Every structure is written in C-alpha cells, then in structure tokens.
Length: 278
Image 1 (spheres, rainbow, N blue to C red):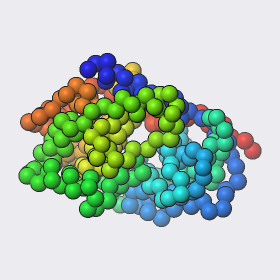
Image 2: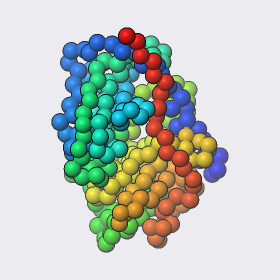
Image 3: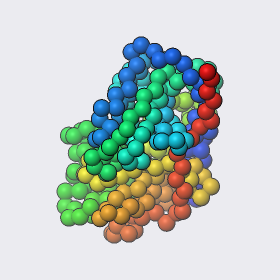
C-alpha cells in the first residue's frame, strides 16, 4: 500500500512537470471571452475554442500566477480563491512544446460577498449540477447525517470503500498518452476509480453539493506532489486525503476525527516559468 500511495503522488508530480511552460504575450483573439461579472459570487468564466492545449492563469495582486487546465469551446469556471483583491485572469494557448501564448487577459477588483463562495460552487475541476447523479449520491449518503461532520464522514467512507486507484490512467498520463486532463466527477462516480486528482474532485463536489465548503488543494504530501482536500466545519479547516484512504483502505471510520489525514502537507499553486516579450 505504501508503494501504491507513493505511485499516486508520483503520478501527479508528472502532471505538474508536464505542465511547466513558457508564456509569451500575444494579441487578443476574436471570440475569446473572459467574464468577470460574477467575481463577487466567487467565480469567473472563460470561453475559447482551440485545438491546442489551453490553460488559464490566475494572478492575485503581484503574486505568482497559478495555472489550470482549460477545456475548449465551452464555459470554463474558475474561482479567485484568495479573497478580496485584484486578480489578473489570463487565457493561454499552446504554441508548441512547452511554449504558450497569452491570447488575452483581464483584471478584476473582486469584492467577494461570501468568503466561502469559491469553495461552494461548481468549477471546471469540481463539477456538479443541482439534481445530477453526483448530488443525488451525496444526498443519499448524507440523508441520516445530523451534522456537517457526519456528512463528511459519510462521504469519506463511501469513497474510501468503493473506489480504487486508477493505475492505468496514471500510466497513460506518465507515458504522455494522455496530455490533457481535467477530472470529470460524473465519470469518476460511475467508474469507481480514479487518480488523486479525480478522488479529490469528487469529494469536493459531494461536499459542496451539501453546502460544506471544500477545497481541491494541490501541493506536497511529504516530498511527493499530490492533490487532496480541505473542508471547513464549524469555522475550522481540516485536511482530508481520499487517495490516502483509498490506497491504505482506511474505511468505515466512525468519527470525523478518523477521517482527518495524518499526513503532513505543504500547499503550493501550480506556478510556472513565465517569459514575456514586448
């Protein structure tokens, strides 16, 4: 099990290494939309059609820009997760290799009405819609839960007991056979397997559908790059690691405390080397 968990973390490390690129400035393209009108509700929307790989950069103030994969040809939702302040949203398109161009960018001074809003909504990598299978499953799991801690425990036990680590997908990503990857919560729910990114995405979607603030967090578990969750219960944040639970077969926890991960983490955004030209 230790070897499998290390493999799970190593796979995500490959994902982040594969995502390191150089960004150059370019003129904005027609048909590109960056909609920031909903920033006060905790999200912005990007829409651009391209056959190339796309990423969206989110920069808070003068801090480093973090990048996330972006689907083509449909509204993609991203959250400004660092609270009130000025954000720069950039759409980047792959030119070749690890070089991307900035198609367009937009700044917004966000005043978020609910500090928890970014952790309660559906986004591109935490997908759910009211009444969909993900929400129905979460509701069924939590129907007898009396507290948010009980709900989190019920969701945790379900994923821990019904899912396995997807070694084939991990291998396909490691080999480069899969070069574009964004979790699909409905697919994960139906397949009963996933990599750490999938498991964290599904857990976050189920929690958010139950009005429990939950992050999909990336960073390091020890020295391995990884994805896990943080949930807010009674004003406190707790770290939950579904990959740890799945690979270690930590199931049938009777208390919320038993669901809290024993691992040590350090959070880190997907920061990438950026080069600009005049």
